[in-house]
Amino acid sequence: MNEQKPKSSGVKVFRNEALAIPQLIETTSKKEDWVKYGEDNLYPNYLVSLLEKSAIHKSIQTGKQDMTIGDGLSITNQNQLSPEQINMVNDFMINPNNGETLEDLTYKIAMDLILYGAYALNIIWSKDRKSIAEVHHIDYGKLRAQKPVNGEESKYIYYSNDWSNIKKEENVPVLLRLFDYNDRKDPSQIYICSEYSPSNGFYARPQYSAAIPFIEIDFEIGMYHLNNIQNALSPDYILQINNGIPEDEEQDDLYRQFKRELTGHKGHKFMMTFGNSTENAPSLIPIPTTDADKQFLVLNDAVLQALCTANKVTSPMLLGIKTPGQLGGRSELLDAYDLYYATVINKLQKHIIKTYNKIMAINGASVKFDFIKPQPLPFTLSESALLQVATQNEVREMLGLKPLPATTPTA
Image 1 (cartoon, rainbow, N blue to C red):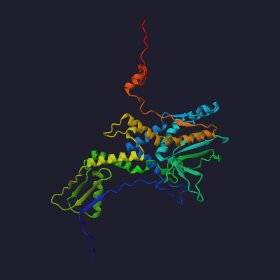
Image 2 (image 1 turned 60 degrees about the vertical axis):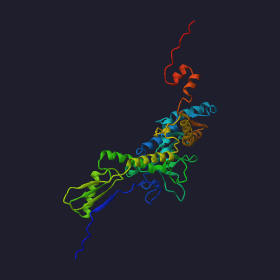
Image 3 (image 1 turned 120 degrees about the vertical axis):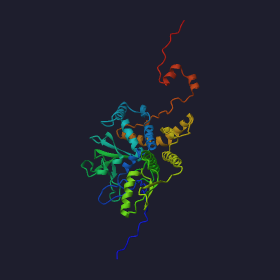
Image 4 (image 1 turned 90 degrees about the horizontal axis):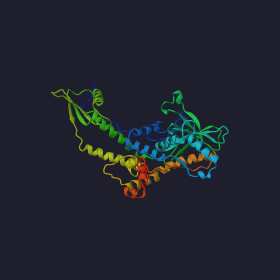
């Protein structure tokens, strides 16, 4: 006797899977000699992709980069250096390697420090191993720690140009020597500087790591609105198929077909029902979402607050982010700038300066580098006070205007 399958009720609710956010998990395997940087060993790629997912996130991080570089580097103890040492430092600032200036190099490592929480340099020793001949940027996200040897951290590190395709000949991981002041046998070594975090293992964590879910939310909000504009059927709804109840497999096929044609981006849910009716045309029954616009406004505010908090942004206006209803007086903005510079930017600068000072010390010059702090608002006096202490031509110079021609006094 054949058992009959219970007849389907004709009602099926389909839900999209929850959004999975990659995590910085460090694991090892027997077949690989490196420590994985994330579950799929591609966590740095994910961090790079986040820059293009959220306008707020990108504005904050590129703003940090620009403020860190400021008006460039200066030597604070130049009067304590000999002419030979000054020439050496100038050569380093003009040409740390054969292809870029020190400012070019600094832009790259500043972004790595902000993006990954660490940066790396390729140090090239001179032939006699007495000094550092060249300094190159190397993408920290392309480095992988070698597995510990006998319980001790390795003195080597792996590099690949593309960890997603290491079987390709040009991407096969290469083992490189980590920087060691006392062991200069290898002419090319990798120097790594990372921000400290109690959660750090082999790899650093960026300052904004706690706000990554809100970066994803910002992206999803944008895609949701984009798809609502492109697709009139994006709201949640019930789709009633009125020409009979098909088998479960056919119901699944129909669902996938309708989902592909009708739904917007992730986050949508719809109910598909099947039944018999005198009218065979499918019915579309919208399920209105009340106050959806207000919900997204709340989410937008939450995203901005979370990203500013994670990055210690004292005022969004410092980084080109205008918030509704915020006027931002001159003195308030200057105070916010000074606080942000002292608590965030200065810390990033110190991680870079100490490396440059160390390189120069190895080469025989006790240099003290520092970044030149730019002035966010060039005029700190009121207009009336400025007119009382400056000449007409001085005011014109501040405004970028040509000076007035000198007049000959009459007798």
